[in-house]
Length: 173
Image 1: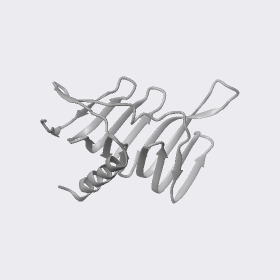
Image 2: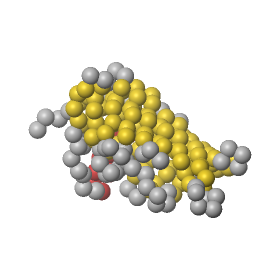
Image 3: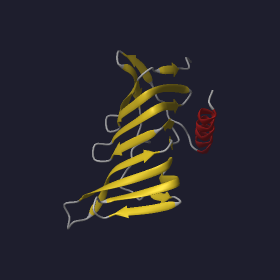
């Protein structure tokens, strides 16, 4: 097992020891493996704290980019990456801006008390509550592990799909 997978599993086990876990199920489908989620992966309107080595702001494109050892925290969700780009949209109320998309790259690890995900890149669209992770994706959910090339989730509906040479380990209890 690659060292990065071991680090992800260790981080997930630490998160499990700090919080109670919920149950999660998965089922085989023709296109891959169907995964069910709770609320834990959803980013909300609450504040998000980001730490990084550098920050760049581009007023023209309306984006902010954090680079170098980036850690974003919202509630119990942690996102670690080499870089995180925040793209903003203008709100209806007097030109206020809000985050519309979070794009993480450079090796991404997301952990919650219930799940841990790892991939090369991740794109999170807040309006649609959709998450797409690409490149050597590994998902750990309770005692179950899934891996594949691409992971797509509709967090509003609470489901997702792992696509591309899917491998799964499901504990039968």
